[in-house]
Length: 409
Image (cartoon, rainbow, N blue to C red; front, side, top):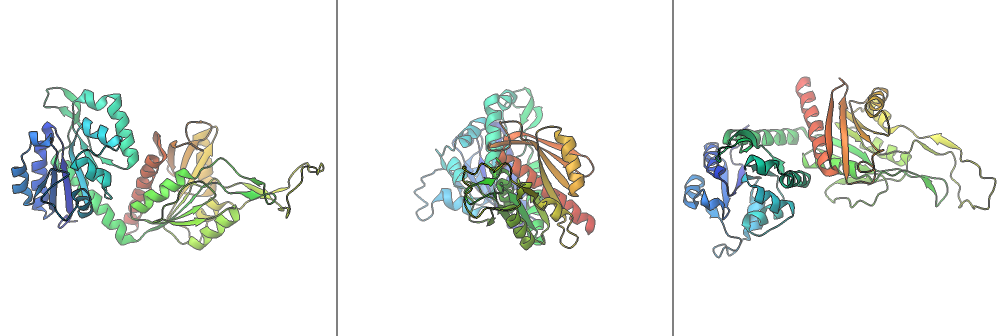
């Protein structure tokens, strides 16, 4: 795929590796890419505005308050103009500013106001990169949705060797090509997905119900991530306190039966992710009136099994999605139980998480999961924010769909 006519905004940070931005711009211009640049104050110590103007054949943006931009507000218009934003080199200082949402110059203000994907290209001394503060900022920025390439291992300008060298212009160019290739392919395929999330409530009487601790956060974040990748996604959500985004198709339900009905209405789809914590049982009969505690004969509630929604989707001969992923919330024997569940439910992937750990899983902003496929391969995503975990899961699911599509064709 050609990058012709793509619009790329490059923000040049203050580091010796800034000179590589000139070679990168040359690569892009050969492919007829439109390029605009923002040169930071420290970036000017390494690259001149004149060099950038000659290469891009465009104005170089430097100041947040530009008297020559009377009509447009640069930090808004530049972001809206771009198809993609690249920050090269991304210094430890710039990472720190972005991690706390600081907007003190044109570069940081554009990034904070951006509605486009942003690629950060780190370059710094190996000790700066490995410092706990920088690594913590890396996790925060990944959670915010920033993409990263590098840094690479190698000899740096300071003479030290290690991880901290900026990725080459060719590596960044290949990353950019792959990004747009994947995005265009998904757009053409018009893939659709459903994601179930949250708990269900199985009412005993008008005020009491059986439920669980699920917040719905992980499934909610997966639906957002899939939607962002270009897969038209429907989120079927049980009761929760989450603020659901307007640009997502959301079906709100209460009980397992209602969730199953919405799933049936949504099929067929290409992908199904069952992240909901559906109650296994429901009362055989719901009391029309509130059961009074004075009723001393109430010794037990007669429960019957709910329909298994994951199994229904995976075993659906008529409308089975091409890819079915289930969630396995376990308190013991995580991998063994999850593999058994994957086989018994006939799904393609099982996303396993240990809900016995209080710092991850139910009612936590964090999670830690292991993704198991039918061949027994296991990919573990270490503890991180649920939004970060969701982005990783979405990328894996998309890659599986692309591979499956390639095999079919």
